[in-house]
Length: 215
Image (tube, rainbow, N blue to C red; front, side, top):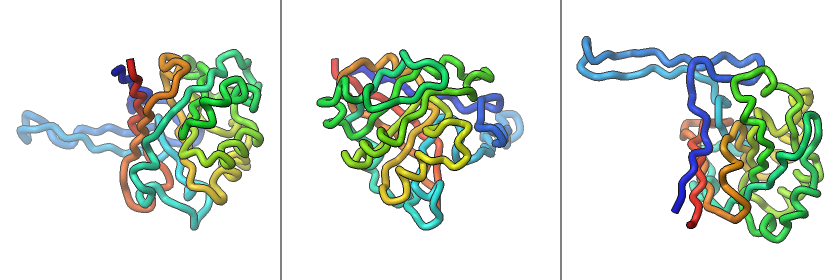
C-alpha cells in the first residue's frame, strides 16, 4: 500500500483566492507561560486544499456536515490533462480516452500540473477548467466528487461560476480545489479520501486529501 498526501499546507503566506484574507496562525498559549502550546487559527472556509458544498452557491442546498461520511471516500481516478496549455479547457476527450475506468470511478481528479505554480502569480492565471459537457457527465454518472489541482473549477474570469452552479443546483456532488501531487498517482483506480472539517452550516471546508494505492 502506498499513501500520497494531496494536500497543500496551510500557512500565513499561502496563496488564497483574490479578495480573500490569508490565514492567521497565532500562538495563543506557550510552553513557557502555560506549559503547553496552542494556536489560534483564523481562516476562511475555502482556504488551501478545500471542499465546496452545494450551499456554497445556493442558500438552501446541502451543507457539508449533513452529508454521510461515505460521500468523502471512494474510488478515484486521475485524468491526465497536463498537456493542456494556458487558457484551454478540459473536455470530454480527456475522459473518453479512459472512459471505462472513468465510468467506474466515484471521484474524478483532473491533473493539470498547475500546482507547480503554487505561490506565484501564474497560479491565478488562465488555468485549465472543465467544460459544461464534462459537468454534465459528472452529473449523469452520479459522481460523489470532482477535484482539480487549480484554484477553481470555473475559469477565474467567470464571475457567474457557471460550472459550480450547474453541479450544485440539484446534486450533492462535492468539489475539491487546490489539490497537489496528482501526477504521482498514476492511471489506475485508487481509494480517495477527502475529509472536510466538520462545523455547522458548512458551505466549504479545508480537507486532508489522500490517495491510497494498492501495490
